[in-house]
Every structure is written in C-alpha cells, then in structure tokens.
Length: 246
Image (cartoon, rainbow, N blue to C red; front, side, top):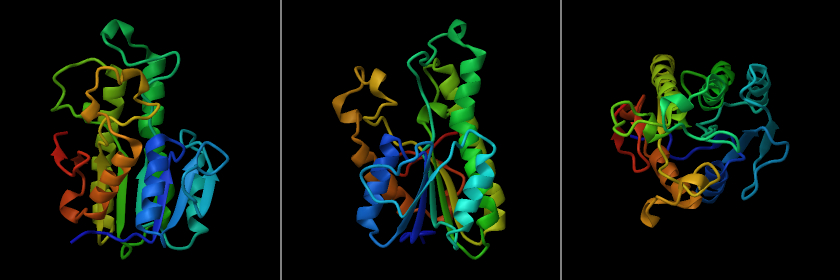
C-alpha cells in the first residue's frame, strides 16, 4: 500500500530548477487540489505552475533552518510530500573533474554544500512539524553516479563524492524518521539525464533516446512517489522505481 498516493500538500525545494519546475507543473495537473509550497533562492515563485506559498531562502545557509521551519509551521499541517531538488554539477568556472590533479578543495566543498547540506537543512527545518500519525514521503533528487557499487568509470570526483554523501544522508534519515513516524518513505531518486541547464554541457555524447525532457522526468518521478510503500524506505531509486545499488 502506498504511503501517500494522493498528496494534499507538497513542498518543493530548489524550486527554480528545470526538473523542479516541471514537477510543480505535473503535480498541479495530476493533483489539482493539492497545495504547493515552494522554496528557492529566488524571490519570485517558479514559472509554469502556481504555488500557493513561496519562500525565498538559501538552504546552504544554516539560518535557513529557522526560516523554513517557521514557513512550514505557519501552514498548519506538515506536507505529505517533500521533494528536494537542490543540486549542482558545474558552473562557468568549474566542471566535473576527469582526473585527480583537477580536484580542488574549494570546489569539492562547494559541491558538498549545495548537493548535501541543502537537503540536511531542509530536513532539519521540517523535523519539528512532523507528527507520528501523519504519513510522509521525502524524495531527494540524487544521481546514479553517486552509487559506489555502480561506479565503473571513475572521474567526476566532486559530484560523485557529494552525491554518495547525499545518498548516505537519505539512508540515515530514513532510519531515524522510520522509527519516529508511523508511515513514511524516505528515498533518493535518480531522474535520468534530463534536458536542463545542469546537463547542457554534457549532452553531445548522450543518445537521443537517453536524454529526457523535464516534463518526462517529472511525470516519471511523480509516478514513483505516488507508488512508494514502506518497503522502499531508505532506497536509491531509478526513475522507473528500480532499486539501484548504493
């Protein structure tokens, strides 16, 4: 039995990204009565769907924990679904490292700050609002390249390391909240290579049938979340719901 197949309130963090915006649109269409809450560093609500409430907050900042906690508390009941889309792969100045001698301390720390700490801060903000009897689905957008067991190519040091750390955070969180809540499912989800700014510089070597639109990825992710049961708690999932190795 699904933990929450018809969410009444959904929180999307990192809401200004391509997949996040597509998720908001998909959820609005599929669950038109659901109340959407969004959090992003931008002051305006994301385009493509209507959020009931939007909060401008930088989740890399520890001060955002109190800010987001108050935002959630003001709305009464906690969200049924929480989707954290925060993440970074590259900037204009930095890309994935192909070899050890390209690794820089500052870029690794920045990758950890955005790919891991944002998710931790969001979870800390949500924690005071959780009620044992209120079912919860939490999904962190992760990446298959963060799987240690699946890594046969190497490279992309900072991104792989930070996503592996995110996966461990999700695993830990699933255990803690699994003990605390009567019904919950906390997962990491790999959306597949999606046509967004994050993947833009790396699309030339991707087969056309392996590069997905943001709308397609969002539809698949919502399918997975709506079908999650407690047996999937603490898993890393592919976009089709397949369990991936850690």
